Every structure is written in structure tokens, then in C-alpha cells.
Image (cartoon, rainbow, N blue to C red; front, side):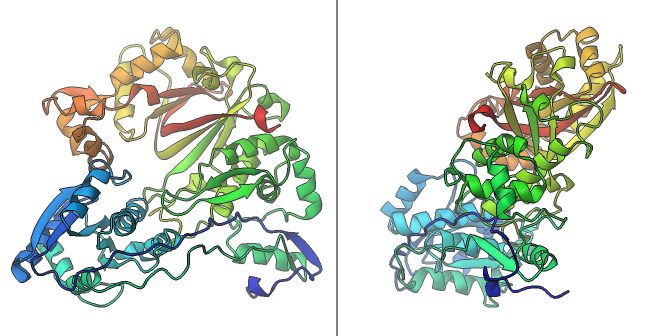
Length: 556
């Protein structure tokens, strides 16, 4: 069967359905900074993104200037926090010294957009000629970022992937070698990018043309193929979102079909797309959801948090529903709750996944999705209801400030690691739990997923009569030697920069001796959820940090 060209589709075909995509943001064209004619005698700032040995590559760029352009003064600076944070104090310093800047290295799905965004900020807000250095894996990613940032002509220079773990000699070869994307010498590109004028902005407000509300094809099979060809599906069969089906879905809420629900993007700096209640309904239909589930799906969409986030670490989301709506729509919190055995659980999670990729402007590997391995959880997340009735503690939503009679949905992000066990032993349960926590990655948090049998053992054997005591206990058991903690690559990337600039509780951990035991997790991020049907006392610890708990009732 041939792939259909979507540009040729009109609403005159025999079968029609609704377009499930969001609305792209309006892009404002920006003016680049004027360039010096030469770098002779200039000051060049090398700005480290503080991700995975970026600094080591910048040292080789500094060495190249020392060897080939000794009149250049090189200043190496690190961002004041992680790559995600703006650094206006540094930008002002660079501007006030009349310098130019090289910022890098963008070599992950979130730091690459951040590096190019910082470069655009320096260019257009501070008037500093700037070039961004990335690895070649993120070529398409950063080209889309600079386009959405209003400076499509922004200089981009590429070196091979990876940078992390490479020797000084290998990184020197990168710097003295050829850009694998453009085919020119790396340093020639950098010098020319800082000394040759860039094209001026060609537009001031450029938006993508409006898409038709309806798409059509000559048959139902052809229309299914069109949705797949446009990357609007998860490559599993969908329910075609006809006008009648979407109208029925809209009956599940009192909200107006044209109301803006939110804006979403796969990572910061990619450009947030907006979407209406109707657009959310289209994706809910495609997932096979029922109108009575629609308020839950709208609450997820209103979070503006994508379950198709583009992290090279292949993150996924987990969704937990609390309150009366669990029973109203027949969600499963017992046997098989985290599996594919319940219509509401399965289709709510799938709807969240589909709306995330379609309403944020796509989720295409190599362009808007860079999860290196991907995650099976991303098909429909892990979506279930908490077994509140069998829990010995307050339910999740009450823990986070809601009333028991409120209906809520909670989004967790992470799921890069899951450890598993059976019950608690009387003698060595503390050591066993501590071992599980060692397998929980350090930059999210442990989320305990407990069958009711095991939850009661945490009360009876461990003595955690309330959830606060449980969280305190897990926090204390989750310790490791300070030297080992600070040597973790994820901690180096995401915690150490914040600690060095005084952010607590991380800054205090820096004072610990290498063999001193320190807390691995932030206590306020630890959660526990009771789920399962008491077939046995199994339990898990998922590396999953709570993003938000949202009201469902607001969307009924």
C-alpha cells in the first residue's frame, strides 16, 4: 500500500476526519549582532554548558587559539547553574568587555536546545557575536530550535558524538578536524561565524499557515494510512476521529470546544504549541477513550507537561488517578491495575501519549524526540487508580493538599529505573530496602508502588503508622557515601552546578567528607502509592518524580 501525500488531501474525499495537531507559535524574527572584521586582539569567551565533559572540549578550543591566534585573549566560564538556567550576569560581563562568545557543547536533547537558546539571547539581547557548538546527533534538533527562536541564520558548528569520556587527544582531534555535518574545518567555521556578518531578519512575525480542520481520503483504509504517514499515531490502530465521534467526546465536559487548554513542547526552548478542547477530544477519540473519561484527559492536557518529552535519557510518564472518579468511570486499582486489563486505564494513558505528540508539534526520532533507547512505557504511560480503600495511609492526592472527595490526576516523570521485591523481612528489611534505593537514580526520587499486603507490612514490621513516617524512613535509608554520590554522572550534570552556587539542600552536601553518608534524595520528592489486589505482597520502587497533581473536577 502506497504512502499518501497529505498535501494532496482535500475535504472532497469520501471519508473525512479531524486533524489532531496543535497550533504552532508565532515566531518573531530577531536581529543578529554585528561582527568584528577580525578576532586579532579580541577577547573570546568560551562558555561551558556544564554537561558531560563539555568543558574538556572547550579547553581544546582554547588551546587552538593559543597555538594559532595568540593575540586572542580566551576566557573560560561556566554557567552559573545547569544549562537550563539563563545567566544574565555572565552575558552582561561578556557584553561589557566587548567580547565574542563560543558556547557549548550541546550534546543531549535538552542541553542542545538550551545552548542554542543562550546563543540567541547573547546575539539578540546583548549584541554579542556568538556561535553554538553541538555534536552532530543534534543537527536537526538545533536547526528547529533556532528557527523557532527567530534566528534561523544563527551559527551552528558541529563535532562528532560523543564528547563524554573522550581523552584530551581525542577532543583535540575533534577541534582540529572536520565538522561532520557541514564538511568544513571546525575552527575555520567558528572563526568565520564570529567575523562574518549574518543575514538580517527577513520577517518580523512568521506563523505556519493554518491547517484545515478536516482531512479526507477515498477510503477508511487510506485515511488510516494518512494518519500514520503524518506521524499522528503510535503505529497501533486508531479510532478515526470523525465529527460525530468528536462531538460525542465533547459531551464529556461543559467546557467550550474552542477554549484554549494549554501549550506544550517536547523540551524547553522548542516553541510551545497551543491546543483547544476540541483538539484534545480528537486525540481522545483516536485512543479509543469514552466521553466519561474526557475530564481526566483534559486535566492531563491542561498540565502542559508532555508524555513524549524529548530527553536522551528516554524518560516516560506515570499517571495516577485518585478520588471518586475512579469508581465512576470504572478504573482498576486492584489486580492487574498497572497492566493492560482495564479500558479506562489503557485508553486514558494512550490518549495522554497521543495528545502529547500531536499537540506539541510532533514526536519524531532525530528531530523532536531524542530518547537514545526509547521506553516501552511511552506507548501509553503507566496509568492506574490508587487503591485508596486498601491503603493504611492517606491517599496520594490528600498527601498533596486535596480533599478526599476531590478527583485528581497526578503525573510522575522518569521511570528510567524500577526495582522490585516481595514483602518485608523481619530481620534485614532495612538493608533490603536500602539496596533497592541504591538502584534508584539520584536525580528523580523513589516512588514506592505497594500492594496492600506489603503496605500493611510497612506499618506492622517497619512501624510506619502514617505516610509522613514512611517518607522519613525511606529518606534515611536512602543514603550513600558523599564521594560516590558526587561522582555519579547525572549528579555532576544536574545537581553539582546548583550546589556550587548555593542551592540547598545540595550545597550542604558538598561539605561532607568523601566517606560521610549523605542523603541521596530530596525528602519532599518521595512518594508512596498503594495499588494492587492482594494476590501477593509484591512491591516496586520506581525512579519517578511527581510533576503535578491536578483537579479533574474543573474539567467535568
